[in-house]
Length: 115
Image 1 (tube, one colour):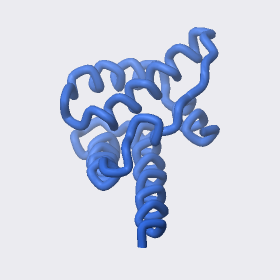
Image 2 (cartoon, helix red, strand yellow):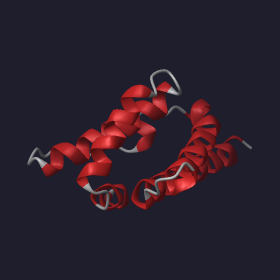
Image 3 (spheres, one colour):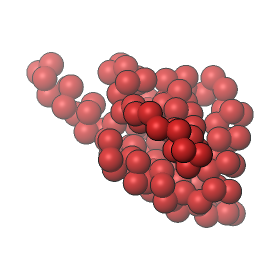
């Protein structure tokens, strides 16, 4: 979990605030992924304000059957935040890239256990 904490800490205050607002507007896109992203963004905001509580891992919100869709959504969101829409946000893109890699590895691990 330390890696996600480091990635979140790399996001500047303005971008973090904009990210939280953007997440509020995604309602219903992919509820489990959105729930974890909201938790992570608010955790980082709270950490900066002096509130200390554990950052939950993505799998706390995302069920195994949602992993393939979450990997795909993380890929799309990473590309979007990378700047294809005009304003690059590399720290957010890095967060999505690492999230995608983490979810893909978990999906592969679970798939391998089934076979």
